[in-house]
Image (cartoon, rainbow, N blue to C red; front, side, top):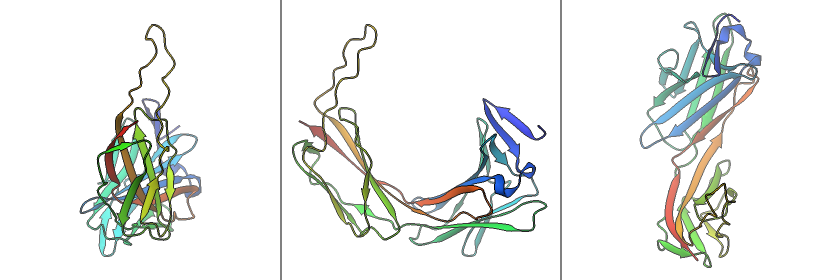
Length: 239
């Protein structure tokens, strides 16, 4: 097929070969300490990544700040193609727009998302917790309506724990005594013998917050998600 290039099993094709209604657009806005990175990728389910031509105009916009994403922000790694720029704001509620004007197309596709609110997770009461006691997490401000906030816990000696959803209005969460449990050893493989699972291990607690925006309906589908820096705390889990 003309315009199709494959590298390491990942294919990239020129976007001009397809209508917008065949394209899936995935967009993210990730706020850091003093700027927000916008990333955009276009895919076609049957082939892989799509690459804009020099005549396609892709812009990231916040207020009066406008940055061209094509071709200046084009990135290619192991066949994957995407576009990224940074915009100079991280204020909660800030709206970011991504606009695409395709060569030989009159309509401009406009997608938008708003940043969720920043938050601060308070220090924990101590560093070492028994699995037989509660762990209290406290943050400010409260979760705003419309923001998606989740808690993840991970530790090498623990049974896997499903992601825990947090809800609008909450400023704290209690991990109840007994929620964390020591995992069973992995099955023996060959001559390796039975795994020894330690009684104690470091555990990372991560709260992440994001919000969902809107993709222009001209696309087949996709998403535009904004996020702020996650808040993490580390403890040692003991019996």
